[in-house]
Length: 193
Image (tube, rainbow, N blue to C red):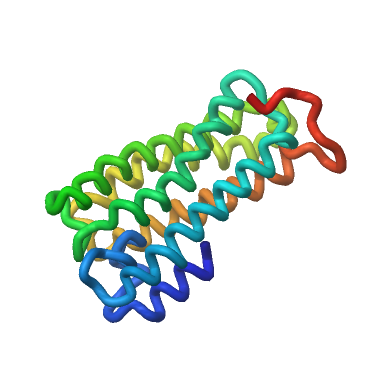
């Protein structure tokens, strides 16, 4: 994901990590759109999907935290949306059918990511790690709030930075999950389903 962001920003003319959405990498009709769709969005989606599949058997979650784990599929879904429904140049609120689908699915993906991270924080493995749990809960609550903020016209000069802050919080959350609720050196005895 980090390589995708830096490579995309370096090859995309006029792109700013501070003011542009990640979706603008492959906006329809712009330079490098096809390459960034397949190498960037589709590749990142596949990477996150692979991570979730591989981690599922060793992730120690149950009940509502298991639901949270399955909601983490919103992460690869969000990049898949970027690949199959790219936004129009500038990612406007209204536009082509692809833009409208992109906007609608983005709302589902961001809210799903936030809820998923918050619910995973309720896994029993986080009981002894209150700061880790708190970070995940705050990140989960931040997703819908920051998403709602970053689509406001007044913060357009900073929307990329807001989106990157969510991306960074999500990455830290995944690392905290890996070191807290992934079974160490053995496969978890619970069902994955």
